[in-house]
Length: 113
Length: 114
Image (cartoon, each protein chain N blue to C red):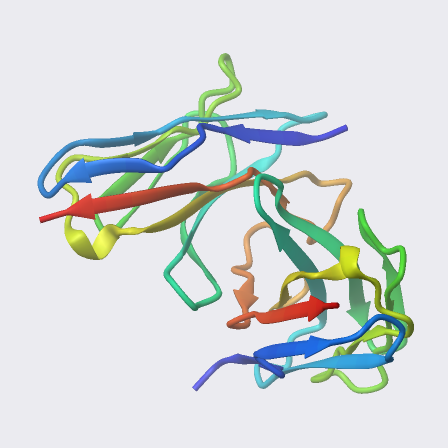
């Protein structure tokens, strides 16, 4: 079945450091890929998405590129802030699972001043 | 303001006592779904609904029921809760469920079943 695997956390960084969170997927066909962010006590918010190979999603300084050859969608940010502390989820949606997001386990990111 | 509202936010209850978690959205969305979030497992879909009176099972439907009598509401029912249903629950909605439409999530309901 479809699955999403992302690196385990927590990831602890200093402010202004570079952040990478790895995400790979297994799916039939070519899914749409997403990154969601969950701040403490809140629901999930869509951070960025990509719907086809080589697409790059970007938002709030975060980027991720849909790599079909490596079935990956790694999240990156060049200079993190304390306000980026959150849990980040990679997710996939295939055309035969309409509306259903297949989530990774989530990666907690802690940014210290 | 566009939002998905869940109630209650927190609930501690006992095994076997029926409970309902409500979910309401004000965006006229057709697609709604419920997820549970457990450590190390991410979010898993419980049930979903494509429209009024149209519901179907997700990946982990055992022990849950849903109904969709009105477009805006999608309650999650635990008729006989058990401790393994202790979890953080999220309701989500989108216009029709397509991958090009953002899914809006509620703030979550933390259930503890003793």
